[in-house]
Length: 67
Image (tube, rainbow, N blue to C red; front, top):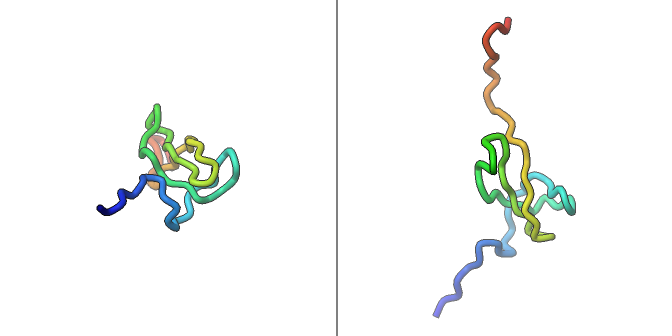
């Protein structure tokens, strides 16, 4: 019977934002949106702590009234 892979495995993962608890960059995105649309939720693969990070807009569009 094949083993099921756990969601937080020790496979090499791309570097994410640093963990606010331990500083590790071995993090993965849990959710695109957190409790508000401004936050993204991440999980640290080293200290096993969830944390949130402020989302930055990729758009360079300026608001109304900008020159």
